[in-house]
Image (tube, each protein chain N blue to C red):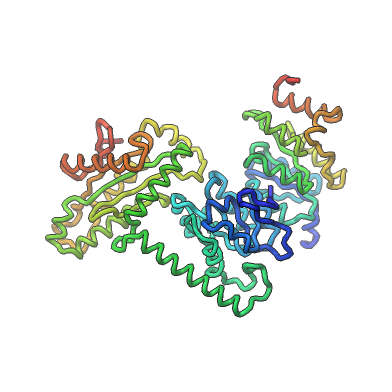
Length: 162
Length: 370
């Protein structure tokens, strides 16, 4: 493909260690779905990438603990720019419930395993790059988001407190 | 997120609504950085509340300079600067508090992991004009955006640019004269005292450590009297050179008296790696092991130093005596630390010289420590 075309080619930004198992796995998925992959060491590099190519269809993925750095401002940024974002929760680490709720409210899709990342890519590609339904705080507790909440609770291994 | 109005400024600084292209991107609290922060209204300026916003805004805008207020960016500064460097052609100027100067200098002079992350730094609080002076004195790329964002610069504008650059150079020279010991090129007593005070305040907030080493050269008067004052000066210069070589880049070495030196060892608040965290946890019980290592190494290197101005009988026999005091274990004010380190130094002298004593240790000569 010509270089001039490549900047319009759909891509996925992977935030975090580019040699990690997660990044490798996303790389395989990207190849499978004919997506370009842009590794970024951290959210600051990712923010620069996004700002540098505002018109390109871009999706963002990474480990939750990487993307939540800096009080979750990165999620606010992807929400503002309508960039689909999906992050994988670390099952071994401590999970801050408030931070996860904040991410969900900012339209971030949470993944418990790589299959969820695959589904995210498929959904967003099928939607033609649109971010999908926004999940603000009010929406979060509506019926159609109940499954998301249930999934979240399952991931957190906590009982719903009401 | 990016601010249209900066809450840190009375009345706010509008961003993104000006018909002119903004030329200054300021990251952080302007009032921490500038004595005349209100003057920002006179400039074409946008303000980013945090480093993430800055990375985003810098990549979108065409700024002449990005001023980063370092305070409060602990742990994220290096990553954010890397992203800023990649995303903008603007000059990056670090706005450092005095205790952050060693880090700022290192980022400007040496960089981090292979690249210079900033173009200049200013010690704050300072004046806005100096930020502009940094742009004027460093602009070599004719395509680089200028302050005000004008595509064409008038002759008057060029002259103003030149004046700013000269002013900035003069101010830097004055700063150098005011803070540096001219014989050894180390920091002077005034600087060491003020730096240690600020670094200590920072250490209290960040639960970091700070260690003060005071030392002097044993029998210095004898060398002066026997070999002359030129030889004495050379000993002082060599002591400064060797200590700087033994220290970590962020540690600050100064000459605080005739043959008396001080070194401030402190935790880098911008590093969050596990090594530092591990050391911090042991701060309440022990002196920092790396400081003791540095002091021992300096003792050895100074003892091995060969100075041509000294006769052959005086080669390889130079020794020092010192005292070492640490926050939080030995005191909570800079006066406490200086006083206790000085007392330890005197104890070392009385005990026969050529030793560095720790405050309050039963086996308090560092030579006896593993």
